[in-house]
Length: 400
Picture 1 (cartoon, helix red, strand yellow):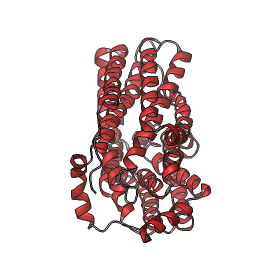
Picture 2: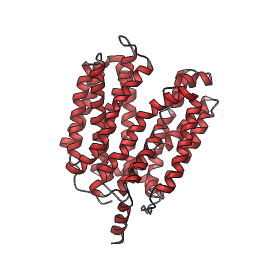
Picture 3: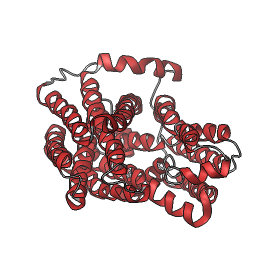
Picture 4: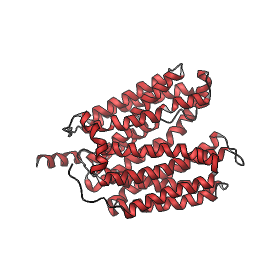
């Protein structure tokens, strides 16, 4: 009975202003991985190395992010959330300042690994949202926080490019560091005080994560289809960048970057999808989102020469996948609502592996086979995700 009362108290303290702060914090944390990408040429000139060398340094961000998903997100169940979030945002501020002060590509690369690891705070916040939200509003709250993550992905590149032009890439990183320091302080004041709930040791928790996929069919299903559509998402965005940079388009990097503005509809979709998941269930929202995405991909495969149609198709594409992601992730957080972080960390790790494979494949496929063939490969992955959702059975819940 004490545990039930504790759950009630946790749910009562997750007020709307707290949820909005969590979304804002998730946006800032996620955005820190991306702002150097538009300024890659300026960074290369500043450090006296080639653009490709800086590209390898920036690849430390995704590598660190994967480490953060595996090693830091599970700490949400073990540490007081306000302390953990304050520590991660403080680490982000320090790592950003280290990157801003870097005089060699090696220092920059190591700083990017640290930035990537600490930027997993977005996944930590979604885990916390799943734990503290009332069951009947879990997907709605998750949708708000996920909208923040989506906004961070979109704004990280756009704001990073703008600030880099205004104050230089080092100044831009310093501005972001100050913002992260402010959020670290605010986390102590605004994140609710909630007890830790995991009784197993930290290392035991890490060792148990691979076994979660064997024990919980719902996690296997969610991770499998999530990896498929994140593979498709990254394939499209990496492939379209290559396609638009080549003849007959030969667009500049700035011109191509503006296509990312289509992702604004995806941010709206995450908020709406969360509310609809609470009303009609995750499976229906996932299927609707994937069907919309398949239709958008089919249009993209033939309409790249039409800017208006391409932007519309990209908007629907992002909206469909972001909606599916919110619904899918809500099923993961519901497996063990009292300690969801290890499930969310395991899920996001597989999800991100799918996206990394999609990024590499999309760029290579667009160069080797052309854009239309790349879009067709994307549709195959999405159809597999639909088939998993329609035909897979998660079975009875397994004892935790």
